[in-house]
Amino acid sequence: MKIEIRKGDEVKTYVQDFISGRMFRRTIEIQKLFQVNEQGKNVIDETHIDALVAYVVELFGKQFTVDEFYDGVEARSLISTIMSCVQEVAGQVTQAAGVTDPN
Image 1 (cartoon, one colour):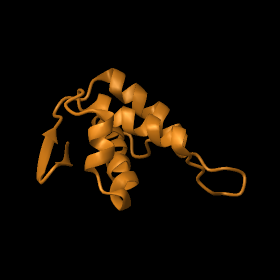
Image 2 (tube, rainbow, N blue to C red):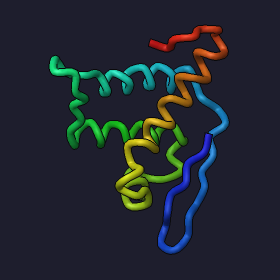
Image 3 (spheres, one colour):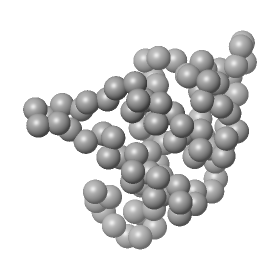
Image 4 (tube, helix red, strand yellow):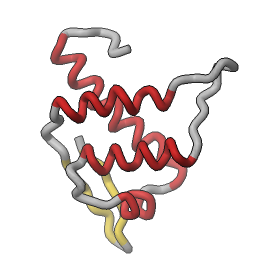
């Protein structure tokens, strides 16, 4: 798994090739933040975003900070970048287990 973060004029690529069991557990916790409300809408506030960004920083072994993530990821791709990480972890584990639906 990799992620690109802008630092000044440079774009740095960070790679994570080991997903621990603990991070899979955290991924399950994080997925709960994307549950829909009674009206069928996702409700994500700034505390959810902070938790999601902290998760990505932890997932990548703290190779970058929360601030570096916020400052280096374009606003329009913030959620999709986070979701890509969550889905990749969930997909890797469920694929290895032979499960077709991770939920």
